[in-house]
Image 1: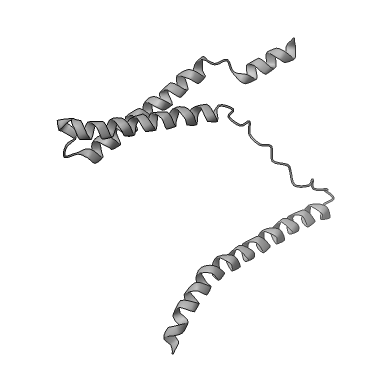
Image 2: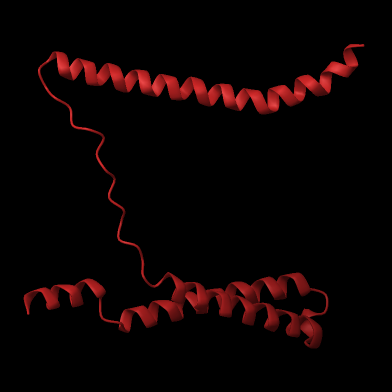
Length: 133
């Protein structure tokens, strides 16, 4: 009879325990924040509202990086498969040859991205130049 309750208890614990833990931690965080604000108010200090988090300047070249890296990944996979099929060294080591070529070409892809970005004028410098004109 009790054997039927084991899966039910397992499901309840798997789903319910994280939810209850999240509620408890959330309530404690809200309570401690409120106590801190009330202590500041009792001292005569008016606390500012929650500061707005400023997003960091996004990297505008993410698509370029992803494109170069994915092309390098594809080339690495193709070269790895070709080496494991047609070279003697890759006959018994196809996993290692493919893995090594993927890592090698990914490194080349990141290096190519670095060199491309290094030659591009900085966007902030361009914006500052336009402000001073």
